[in-house]
Length: 636
Image (cartoon, rainbow, N blue to C red; front, side):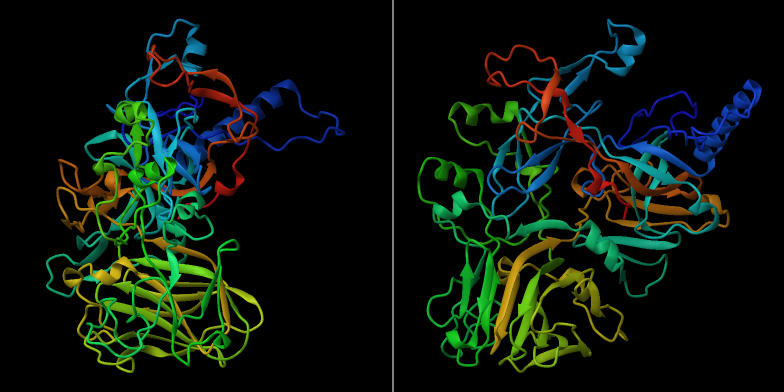
């Protein structure tokens, strides 16, 4: 770590991730009713002993770190602003660049005029008028409003505890979040996720990590996260409970909408979203007209289907279309104009943490009283096919069938459940199927746990070539799709997976002869690892354990300086490993009152802007605040 002195406060060091010294554990207090039994010498020896124990604990067991940058966001936040979207209420964080980044908003005075102690504790800081953050973009795909953050406080990064003990007696495991010394500057500490192990050849393909034994010609294997970790590190795509009502009122289409059935089989290609009979998914892609029995409750954000409403025994289809508004769409709505008809897009690797607009970038739009547009490099760049659908499902009668679908390229993975028996089945339509009966069955039937008469939480995912169904947080079925020739279920080789028209509408729910209500619909995506200077890596498995090599990536792949970019090679030797991130023990405190902003006690200094920021001050410290208990959690 940067310093082992007990008297040093938690301090950042240069580099993307920085540690702070651990707080010394306090000795157990003596009850107030018990008279003192120790001499002054005993007391002094006890205090010294406690400090020595704390020092040893810090040195050999655990240490506290503070995260200054966003290379591991959203798992771990660096310096950031906490934002609640003005239009849909979604809460999200947007990163704040810090020194030595050339995009840093704050410049600290290295020669404070006050006493040295106060100067170190509260160094003078001046806002860079051009790099000051103006706006941040909501991550909810049905909103993506450009929110002003001129008066939003900059918070310190997460404070975490790192356990140094595990790697003394056990091997590091793939997907651990690890603190290590940067190979090119060993005095600097980094924190990343471990994705490659000694003796492996690793590739990044379509955002996923693939590996095999180094020097072999065996089939590539996809690196899969545990289901628990998968859930914890997913990123939001669309939250149906948080609509942008101003946009919808102007004529913007709902993302979830029923589909009209095709009256008869047609010649459209299966799996393209064109008309093709009564097979679920092979229906018209527009909103429902005649023949659909799904009914939407726009206020409660729920959907209900009942055979009494029609359908004639056919599948009734409710589909998500990935409509993404831009600043130009919001500008029309703000002027009272009707929304333009959008075309759905494939889901991409959008990171709200990175999507921001500076004062300099926003200056032209601000003069026109319009919302600014961020740089294209700060927006999504790559199609993501690893998706998860979750929602609340109420089966009102034990009859009929229910189906969930996730689209990836030419495949439409489904979970079909018989509501009379609760039995489920994974399958997908054959890619050259001529009718709905031509399907590939994946595994045996299973008990889905879905029962009539109560609301249940259902989650269906296609992540890392693995299909999983959860019902009420219990895994009911898992199917792995692999590339080995003897694998029970074959995956499409990643090089052959291409985005298709149906990936613009990649998630759906269907019902047949069933009375079902669904709500709280949420779509999430997996982390997408982007290409760098290199996308293939060979890691040494040395006779000297200290020289074994590991590969580390940041979760915020577009903004992570990791093994994909290092000049001296991509690997981290075992001897540079410090420990495993254990928990976030202190995220930033939350201000309250004054619309969630608190009241500024002090503000940052800012040069005269000639009215550019409309006199909006940037708070440095606010009151009152409370601990952010919900983010004090284990690091996955």
